[in-house]
Length: 147
Image 1 (cartoon, one colour):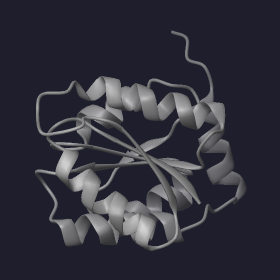
Image 2 (image 1 turned 90 degrees about the vertical axis):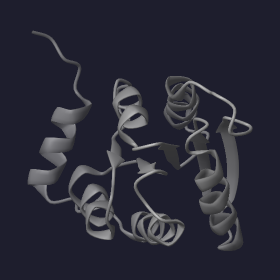
Image 3 (image 1 turned 30 degrees about the vertical axis):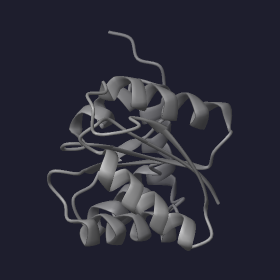
Image 4 (image 1 turned 180 degrees about the vertical axis):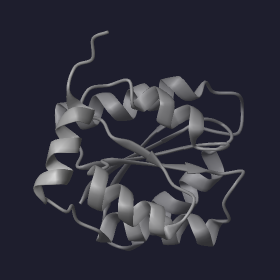
């Protein structure tokens, strides 16, 4: 599967770890964002991943920052990007099943390397539940907003 990983400086080392694990599992991985632990703005990493997913160049994205919150907020500003900040395997499974998440967000300061890999693995192994109620709600998520 073609995956794109992005991070800021806080998520850089964890991104490398999870991306290397994904590669070892046969995934084709591209990395964007920080090139080191030197300061890098997380919205730029989110923008790069979201734009590539929207173009159809990659099937899924993975974003990392200190908590996963900042990258998820930014990524979710893009239509049809459903970024899920997950801190457990169960959240990853439910994010895929019920919300049809296409971007996994992880917090490098919150999770261990082992937890991050387990959450990533669950996210990748879980399909979507296409029951009418879930599809309807995902359509709401993807719809343009107006007040």
